[in-house]
Amino acid sequence: MANQWQAWVHVKWKPGTPENAWESWAKNGWVKGVWSTTGSWDAMVWVDAKGWDDLEKFVWKEVRTNQWVERTETTWAKQWWWGGDKQKTA
Image 1 (cartoon, one colour):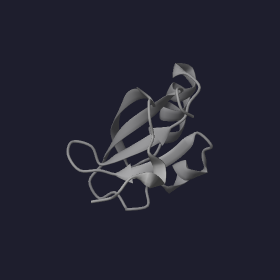
Image 2 (cartoon, one colour):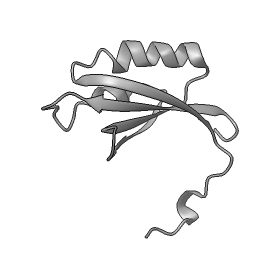
Image 3 (cartoon, helix red, strand yellow):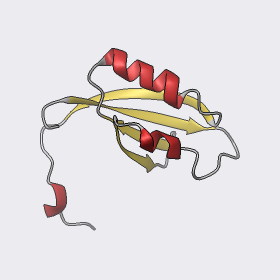
């Protein structure tokens, strides 16, 4: 996965969204993880898509069809380094 482009899909939930609204995305092979976040967005989905077209299909067919999703924003990222389990936690 190193040196490959990946994407982060930021998700804003509608009011009253249940905690497990994201669970159907875990079945998609492109999804590497889902995080609850603070700030302007409520969740982030880490996607290992092969390109823009694949990512767009995932966002519009999987994420945006979820009844609880209000809006999304996508950011691409390319991994330079990953410390893995060697990193200390605070």
